Length: 364
Image (cartoon, rainbow, N blue to C red; front, top):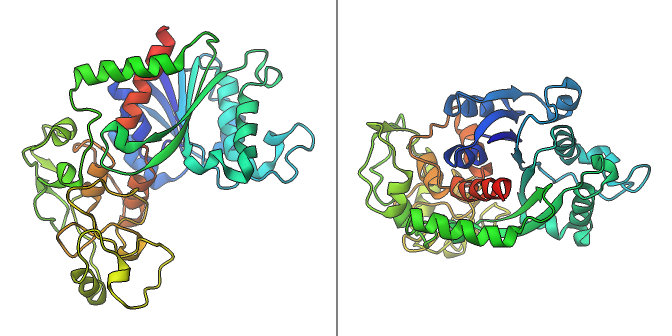
């Protein structure tokens, strides 16, 4: 089973699909630094480092290139203004990211596509944006008489055994009119639970990162012995693992963190904090799931990302564990790009489930 990953980032979706037996033939990523991480962790995938606006004109995607297309086109630019002029929603130039995702699907005609997005896409502008997306993929005229039959769901990371309160919208399209996706969804859940008991169990921050030793200057540590089912699932056979370094915080930031207990945030400081985030200077609790890991998990003012005990924010390895990345996955680049790679990724445990579901649809 072949797949193409659009807007691949460092490869959170690709990881799950590869683990489920798919061959990810091609990936598209605009940012060269992020693409470097993808290339090094997915050496057998051809990575196209380019703006997706150029992909349509390149002719690199042809009908039959893949059984499945995966990806999460950013939708922040969606606007209904002028959208119904001419050929409708898809002609609005501000929607090019979604437009080009659709155009690759139209060119390749995969049997299944999986699109991941922020939960808010379903309610943006009173739900009209989402309605147009669904209409576009199910329009026979725009798809050469072969429309996709659609299923969508809001998934919560905690329900997939990921220690994080992340919620995302998933849209699945298939050319098979008779595919019972809700039924297959339940089948896949039962199969994975039989193969990996505890896969869907609730996981805490302690379950995820509790066995990691102190951070190091270069981020390299001896591979720790796993102590929980979750750690075992993410463990690797390498002697050392990487990316376990701490951010160098200012004295003021460290002093503030020292006054915050588990579950508290900046409101415990009784001083003015310049942050737009309501969870700024929040300290994680060992026995709970973390909030959504964002691209600013290295910044105390960026949200609730302070280590449960230490006066520092999460290391990239800790954030990757909370995102369910395997320990053997190496993130390359400077601190900013590594945080971006981890924060923007689809948790691989969720993508593994989606991959198993896609495989089930293909065989149904």
